[in-house]
Length: 216
Ligand SMILES: [Zn+2]
Image (cartoon, rainbow, N blue to C red):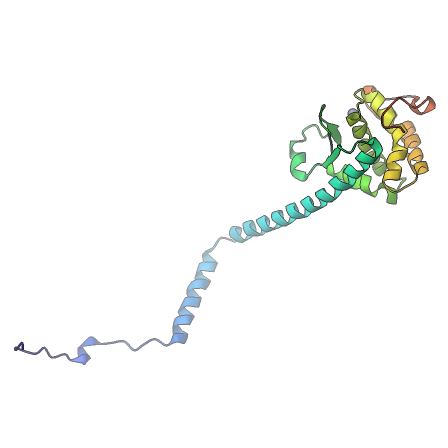
């Protein structure tokens, strides 16, 4: 047993503060959070919303792109008779690299036709508005690129093949062959003569159809 002086504790010496009510602590916390939000730059919110909008726009365009890819690919395969052909409707980010501004192109040896996104939209909607000039040109560009993939390399010859084949394109898009003939005649008279010299094909529709695996 240890003996000695026993320290005497006087609770009055501690000067304990009374406990802070819970409601008061919450008020302090909320004030701190509010202050932090006030200090945050408005650019953080703007940047965050820009990212959200960009993601939504990208996802929407990709869904639309897949739809048009399939629709144009189905037409390309039908008019060429080649089940291996594909059409790629270029997305917005593809256009950033499309420095030449081509509406359509193919790579030699490839089985894929690349079309500008607006061309795919116009071609897909042509049957609803068969006399619209932009939409007529769109289905001619589609048919022209498919003609390249079918073995036609010379541009003038490819234009002529496209004019002869566009009635098949019209049928594949849900219109009649006569609607396609009207497109070919309009194109031959109004648009082909305006193209670069090596694309022009004067008298194409006056002569016999050019030999082509597309024409059946
Ligand atoms: Zn061409």
